Length: 140
Length: 287
Image (tube, rainbow over the protein chains, first blue to last red):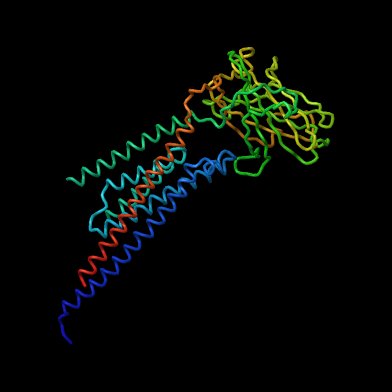
């Protein structure tokens, strides 16, 4: 048995592995983008259209909490899936995900909540939490 | 070095957004009331809704739940109607109607029923009620009731010497639905010691409460079993045609924002499709 590996074989294996990774990353870009789009649409309904906005509002404190939670979670999910999708997209193009895009996404997410101060406040906290979490996990 | 500067910029932007959102939050909370009562014709306070003459027609109506506590969401559903009288005089009135149905409502079981409003100024804690106005039934079947006006002295309900405002109630035709009607004066200075002064353009919390003790006389607030609060901004005067329609502006702005986000999203999808083509080209080249 040869003690030296065939370098050509090694390159072929790593190239195949890279292709699979690229395929998975591309699939992740698309699926995450679709999910972000779905959450953006539902967020549009619940944070902009009066009929949906007022379904759970001002009835009792319990429904108010449910209402704020739904609106906040929709925006946070939009932010999260957008970030994942764009991150993978950038990865495929060989560039890093820069701060400008994160800030733009951050602002886009906050703008969605501007009709309701409570939703805006909790969305802000959620976004900061996600960013801090990603910052530390990415750094490490 | 560049990376460090970028991080400082990001932290700065986030801090700026944080303080801006807090500022917006406090401003918005201070300005938003649940109800901005419309102006309209004065209803007669007699416990009867005169639909033929369009009474309460232009009032703001909302459905509310009166519930035993904040944890239990199951309660009594009521209709609350609010209107201010259309006057150019400084002194005006705000009118309320509360309507709901209960099984066998005209029976002796409800002889001690009462419903009222506990009014607090917006910048006071909600627990510190300043003025209470209520209708206390004495005999439901013969429609005997009394309109009562109280002020709070060290958590004790003390009856006002001068009764401010008026109230009436009546069981409606189907014998289960009851109508309560109230009139509270606005910018009234008749009794400033024992009554809250409702000022135009100020917001007040109106705690609507309900009770039905088995024995008479009722003890307030111990006999209150259901309640809920709503904030109302007393309107300064009839909004003119050039008043700024903030609600409509906010609606248009939010639709514009979402459209911009939608366009950005579509552009991103287009970029993804370009990426796919680019990847396929690279694949073909490699083959």
